[in-house]
Length: 620
View (cartoon, rainbow, N blue to C red):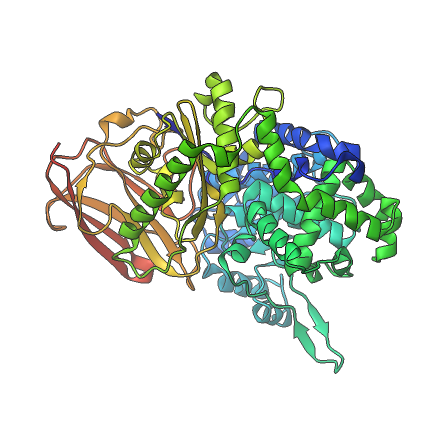
């Protein structure tokens, strides 16, 4: 028996909030910030937000999606689109929860403010509809031709229509959510917030609540020769650097390594005039400065004290009440001494140091080798360049801490999503364990091989194990629990490929589904169903929402008898609780036959792509 978690939602990075040097090196409140933020995050994710549904009357949506024009609204925020209304609802609800969370960590109540004036946003469901939306806006005077030309030149992700709304090109759900909080920030943050504080906070919030970075901001400017220049998108090289776009753990690991190697990232570089100028290393620095200010309770006060004032280092220094040099030393002590603090947390929780736990180390290595073999099989017949997965000891330490927390709280371990949280008032709570809780898979067995074999017989759990960009894991066990972190270190995969399981010509494939929570087929008995067939789609240079159809046949060709299956897609999940991006799944309605060859057909008409492959079940 095991549990899953919302794969694309990343837990608040409270780990660093508890880390640091001695108490005299930083404000006392920063030591208590981790537990407070962990509790607020848990409460924010459980906020009951009522969403209203209605047909959309937005002109762009009516022209592009005349038969599926939908609208959802709450607290003055209206989202329009042609996608399923359940998808719009998920995007709106998570965006509003993040805004409530932001309010709380800035010293206000944990509540969603009513946005005034009301804000309208159109979310396009396919990437190729953006040009059609531009044409519609030009035709109906929402944009001038010159404005549209600039948008194309800057490769803008969205634009403001002068008729009263913003239109966004296709994004992931996390990307939509980040866009929503970015577009509305002046309605729930202090107006004229300093760009360094705004960028740091929005990026931190997007990364920790949604699992993505804030939208890239582009703008027109004139160089010294009065030529128009366009701010470009930085090219990120290296898995750790690329994954820093979505994981504060990766971001922290990369920046810490560079700082220890002697690189300096002064905060003054982030104190600039334009929001879009806060990028690359300066954005990472602003993000972690923001995190520290949240932990110390200073962020809300600093935003208020510096609003409407010159965008200078002097303004920030006066708002902090100390020199930037003093603040930099204080921040660096807090940021760089995290590893030592992890060992202290572990010792306080009553555990041996990780180096002394030989059994756990052996299990972690066994998990690593098993996972590498699975990935090798999955990619053997596909044109995929995948990251090599390695074991990160500090991730293993965090996973072990969460396994111990579950041992102390067995009733919570049986609940979903409760098993993927740690409550600060319960025995065994640590911020490090709380990070692992949100980034890991959990199994009610300490044996990593048993756990991984059963995870591969599910839909939700399998996905992160086959993610091509996964390059770092952590494994820990305690009592009957094992925890595998597959969510902290994933670099975006830029290729165009489909990853399928079971792979081509696989043999001895298990015949039955392994029950998991949440149930992807609500109300059904998963034990009576067949082994799931999954496809993870990566679109490369052709991003967007593409429709894929999948069919399972009993026999060696697609001319055989079709097998009755449930079919799950990102836009049509059977469970509204969890809808992974770009993941498709066939779940046979009955256990598969023994020693039987099956054929799978997957087709995408829009891309004229078709994939046919076979696998054979075991003889048990």
